[in-house]
Length: 246
Image (cartoon, rainbow, N blue to C red):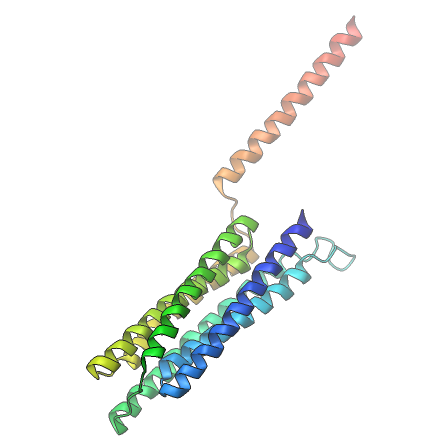
């Protein structure tokens, strides 16, 4: 059962790596051609997602190591550490998005620098949004199914990235058809949302490492199973006593 879980987590992570590398490639090309800081930062953000999936694979492999004398309770909590590392990557991406967006705003007011977008930019970013949204939903589904904090964290990150890409698309459309500069301001706004999600993932992973209180439904199930075992034991004892008396 544990081996199947490990294989599923690794398989899901590989899907994320391949998907994000493709997104990074296409977005980086579009961003460089259009001289768009928002698209380039979006590409960098997808690159951190690919790194997150690699960290998830490493963490899963390590967490499933068998217990030994040095660690008699096993290595299961390593998975929480990988979730923490993913949170750090999310926070880094958020702060970088804000930093680069501020520089872009300063450059615009100093030099009037505006990105130049073509129709293919809109098409590629639109497709990227759909792909990223599907990756996020897929990771969340697998994370809940496999009870993997690392996959849940990656899924949440991917969903927020799709929102970031939507803002990038809006900026592209406004810049192309209205010739109004917006991408720097949108970058700051989305950067704040990314940082917020990073802190949420960090809070959850650290809480799990310290030791969360079990879910009430989980406790109820344990109680019911325990009572069944006790009742079965009582029946056996009573049966043995009746049998011995006869």
